[in-house]
Amino acid sequence: MQQAGNLAARPVAAGAASDLLTVQDIKREYRVKGGLFRQDKITHALKGVSFAVKRGKTLAIVGESGCGKSTLARILTLIDAQTAGELQIEGEIINIAAQPVAPALRRKVQMVFQNPYASLNPRQKIGSILAEPLLLNTNMSAAARQKSVAEMLKKVGLPVEAHNRYPHMFSGGQRQRIAIARALMLQPKLLVLDEPVSALDLSVQAQVLNLLADLQDEFHLTYVFISHDLSVVRYIADDILVMCFGEVAEYGSCEEVFCNPRHNYTKKLFEAQPHADIASIQRRIEARQKAVEQQTGA
Ligand SMILES: Nc1ncnc2c1ncn2[C@@H]1O[C@H](COP(=O)(O)OP(=O)(O)OP(=O)(O)O)[C@@H](O)[C@H]1O
Ligand SMILES: [Mg+2]
Picture: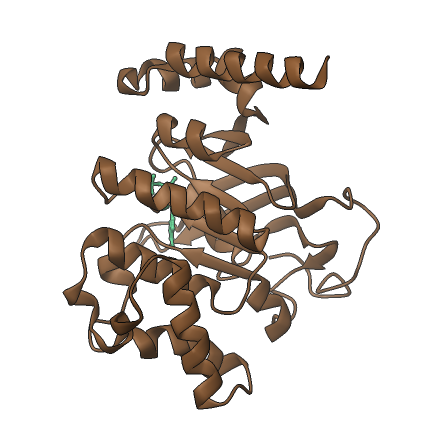
């Protein structure tokens, strides 16, 4: 672990002011017990990952199973601590191994998980699930919490009556809307979404992606979006980070990486997803670029 000290939470000048999140050479090792007469094994889940995400933008993280995406998500959402390296949110260096995270900081970052069936308590009504973050983190009155819940249900496209029902009374897409609503209750700045639509069928995926795009505009949210599906990434992301065995294989804008993949691993990843139709994704990106150039007279 990084040594405790003055690294816990001090403002720094480094990083562009427009960056909400900066990650510098983050490493994460896991020690797995070897058992009787066997040595402990060290897994290097992240071997030095660096990137930045601008305010209001979306960074997609792609890569094969086991390359470290969820490990990174847990570090970004302050659930887990890095072994080395530096994490900054709004210019503040954060090291949860050195010092407990201040509640105001924890509120800035929220996570949406892949499986909305497992991430919602089946015994809690939706109203109580959504009000809980407010109950635990604010001094709002019961009436104000109820009002906030009703407003958020509307924002994510669910009827207000949903507050009185249990999670099993909703479809997968509706449950993911509830999970997104819960993540937004404390007005975070950064949402880390770990495969948020992969458990949903195609038409529902599109609805949830549209909802996420609308919410991003409305609340000026910054997203880190983990996905294995390149057509989803093309739709939602501004930038892409391609990970391979705990390292960054490629990092750039959607345009750069889709139209001109430089790393062999990225090319192989694209070839492995014929359904994503990379050629048509490239054509659409180029057409969009041309339209922007014509508009701006570039
Ligand atoms: N708590 C842990 N203890 C030990 N090893 C772990 C732990 N969590 C993750 N790992 C290991 O770290 C590596 C990265 O795992 P991670 O879950 O981050 O991958 P991933 O990219 O999210 O995979 P997937 O696409 O399948 O979700 C794997 O080798 C995994 O076995
Ligand atoms: Mg994962």
